[in-house]
Image 1 (cartoon, rainbow, N blue to C red):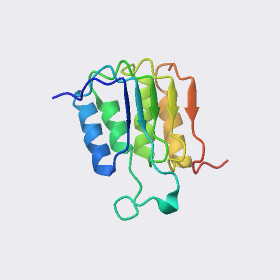
Image 2: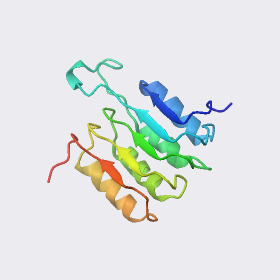
Image 3: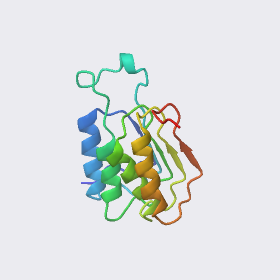
Image 4: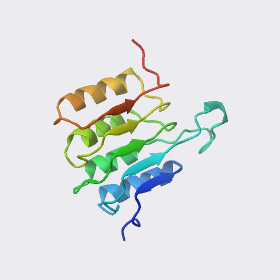
Length: 147
């Protein structure tokens, strides 16, 4: 079964839901008409209690999109604000942006996602080795990035 036809996916998931959504993308079971994925999470870290205090890990979703055989051709924007993106997720994001499977992706918002210097470095290295991207906006506000 495929995910129903949607033009945007504005939702909130816990870690298990994110894993399941990533698996749907990886298996090619998400509809090609999804233009925006907006999974925003409560950015008040002290009040954010998922799974005993663990923030939602978004790496499985990003890896699922990157691993998709056919890609997500209509996808234009991803907003994952407030979740957690690690090194693996940042590498997958670079693949998504430069692999040609998501050719029209122009807006990525990953603000307040606990991205650190190592994750940003991984993203930059992977992104640099990919084809050109149509990226217009990359929002990295409120992360753990230092100079």
